[in-house]
Image (cartoon, rainbow, N blue to C red; front, top):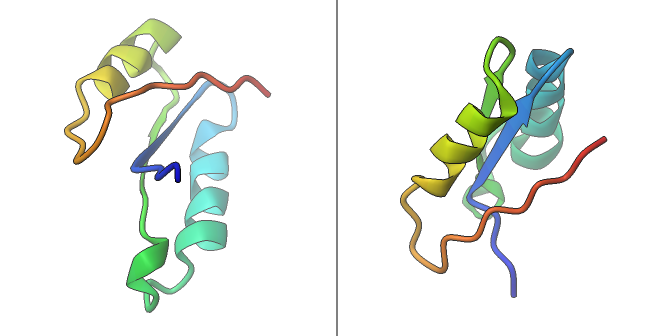
Length: 69
């Protein structure tokens, strides 16, 4: 089973997208099983955000997947 630990969003509108992810996934925070760390990088190149994600501490396999919208 895949477990997402970090969602990093880059580019135009990334702050708003991060907020939407927080609301949809985490909600009010009452369900601890629905926790994920999010970050937005409005003024950073994609390469910098990918480097940050690759260095993210994880309990499992540290695998970064790039999804473009």
